[in-house]
Image (cartoon, rainbow, N blue to C red; front, side):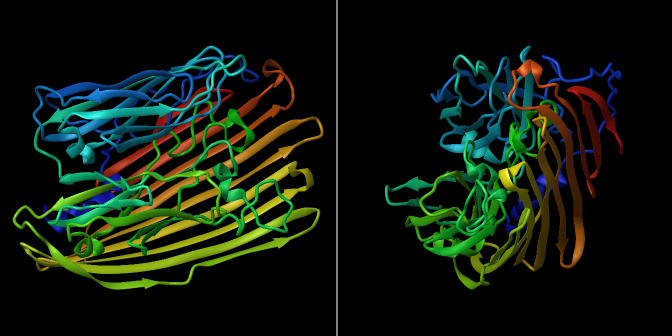
Length: 533
């Protein structure tokens, strides 16, 4: 596969979905005065995976009931009747749970490759069902042979937390013209003293995926709220809330990225915000992508090379982050060995300033950022190709709280701007992706023990691709969630008198067309489901 075609991976998530189809609006139901024991099944405004017409084959990948921390293990076999080259492969998870349960994190591995990172909704007493769809075509190399399957959604079931997570996962393979996919999908080898990567010697493009998530149950789940001494707050970190996910090759910084501020379905102390509409990416955690092609000339020597992923800002010796790595490789089909070298490596000083202002309302203001540029060339069968990757991160936040944390508020913005330029074969292709994540909200507890959370989350990105300076594709994404929910603390569930309004609008438009869907719920009843294109 040529280098120019491979660069499209970086914006595939933004340039793919078709225009939204017509959808019948639900009847406006009578809205109860407060939450009861049942509510609408979880739903998200994100677009479904577009499926091609024609022949398809379905394989059950996993089917399990998760009650504890015992993984499901099985064996995958390729489908029969759809060949071994597919136009699309779609993963679908269907789940159901009832009773009482926390939100739980989960993963799904096929042949050691992580193809899904997910979390779960919290159930109603009467029970809910939910589903997740994901385009997993890029892992086609993994799906062509028999593989071990491992899946885990760690859970606790006891006298209080009764919800058993009943899950089924399938893969649907669509026959037809093969999609442009990596030739190999690799995982890192654990040597006991670190993790290593050995690439094929004719690799001409290399992209690492890192499914980075702050774990549940500790302060790193809410890393964006942590503070440094001397600020008097319950969640501490040595240098405050800035986090940056780094990847290194043989000890040299190869990629930087801003982690997405995931909010799971029990987040911000208020599950009533998330019963129907989850936060962006909560059920389908997207991996961070790092273009490691500038290092291809070094990696192609046939030897194992150390690859490390770390989280800047995580207190030393503290756990709390999971960061499994997949490596996607495109090979030169006409050359057994591709040589090259690293030609530029520029790292700016990391800026991380966090200032505490005491008072009746405590305040921590944080400003941070980082820049990295790497460039390298490879000598392929179609000539010398030079890849330059530049990434700039920025973060600003204002965290305010009162004594006892009866008021706790955050206004934060993260930016992650990336440019990848591929110069080879007489053409220059540049892919630019600018990502912005926002979080603006507050939790307050009144004298009557009424807890109220008001929160807005934003997942935004713009992407453009130019060929020799001429724009050939572009897109804009704006996924915005807003919630306002209140309930009474320290009482039995049936005495919480909870109320809440939530909404999500997912807009994606550009050279591919338009998708625009809006959802609204009141007390768990879906009152709006509208297409706006």
